[in-house]
Length: 173
Image 1 (tube, rainbow, N blue to C red):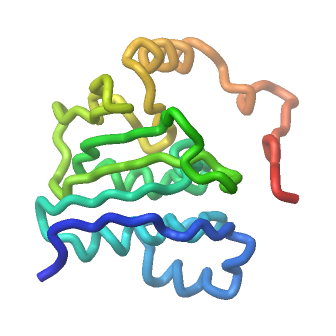
Image 2 (cartoon, rainbow, N blue to C red):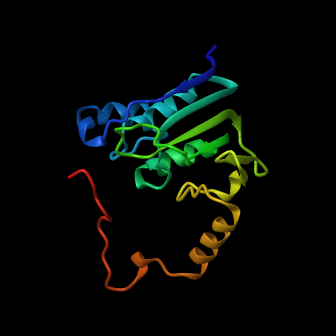
């Protein structure tokens, strides 16, 4: 059993409000659990777990999981499936009072293969194998190549001698 399709807009609740539930999330959502993850992250694992094989899954959610550290396990989890469509550019503001930018992600519950392509912003295709769980950069092919070249040649700031980084910009304090 299960569902042929799941469409949703999970609630956006910041992790600071979830302290009393973290033990539950850790026990029940081990594939995506990260102590600093916002609530919507757990909806991905739950939704995909009740979807039938080859079923379709579509969410409009905050795009923060794409680059945030707490999204690494979620990104790895999602890469196991065919991501069919990813939309992150919108002509107008989607949610008038939202403090975060949304994205739409559509997934087919099927094991991903190296040749699978994602339709990005309804205008270009990106090989899913070009993405990684450490950094999902959904952008045009030339930008992905430039990013990869920079990463291969450059030295990360965290690897510089005598430089200690604790947090980047932190909002909502």
